[in-house]
Amino acid sequence: MNQESFEYNRDQLQYLGFGEEIAKSLHTKMEQNLTEFTLDHTRKFGKDELHSVLYFSKGDDAAKDLTFFNRFTSTLKKEGMEDLSQTFFVGPKYNYTLRERYNMMDGRAVYREQPVLERKEMDGKLKMVPTGETYWAWRALNFKEADQHGNFLPKMIRWHDQGKALEKFPIVGAEEKYMQARLLAQLQKGNQVEVNVLKDGQEVKAQMVVNAPMMRIDFYDENGQKLDIKPVNRQAFGQSQKSDLSPQEVQRAAMAKATAAKEGTQAADEAAPAGQKAATGQKQEPALQRKQAVKI
Image 1 (tube, rainbow, N blue to C red):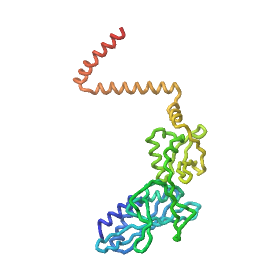
Image 2 (cartoon, one colour):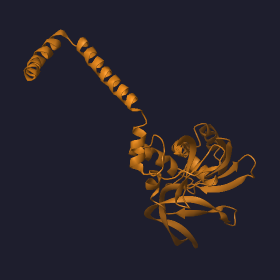
Image 3 (cartoon, helix red, strand yellow):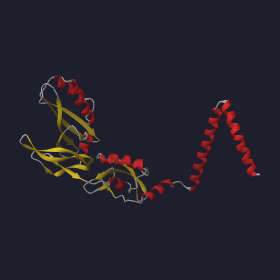
Image 4 (cartoon, rainbow, N blue to C red):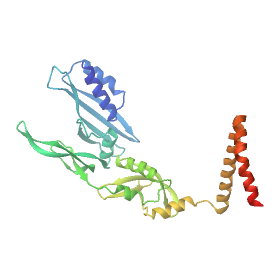
């Protein structure tokens, strides 16, 4: 068995989201020096299960003894629904993780860098090959069209303003750009993101998802019912979030903060060496005298 080939496949499987445990089965199969073999894998996503069959084969150069992970066929099992299967091919670059593939099969899109492809004749056959250039787009499955093998065709959506769309909604705790960027990163993976939003003046829990074909962001309640969340003025919303306290509570919070800072300063002075205290006292004394002179 080619150890380097095993380690490459092991690391690729882990990166794509198949976990570490599958490496044991991979090692066993590769030790048998099989020309082709498959591995089974199951992963849960909430109440859903994704069962996958992974396909491996030897390279054409027997001397190099290389094994390649070519493709996997996943079957999505959802309660109360018929099973759904799709085959995904694996290349050296621009691969999607297992979670991202699950998100596509569950009807969502993923925002990723894509290779520009062109049709070329290779070995007497027309194939789509990368040109070396790339672009960014949302990729989803077109459940209305399938090829002769029963695989759904890909659907590409070039929508790049999802960040601007996100910042318009009254998402509690997402006033800062940093938090908005974290939420956006999850949405771009096709994930359902749990958030708290303001609806009719009340804070409610919601599942947030990107609806790439419609170029918008949608919200759903815990029962899967769509929520009508209105966009707001982000600046005004941010200010309202900062001023939820009553005037009295603002006063008490400010006084408590000042007291804590003062106690922290005193504790630091008590912990300082005697020489440092004396030096500090000498430096502060003229300042105290100046303050007294100003009062007089």
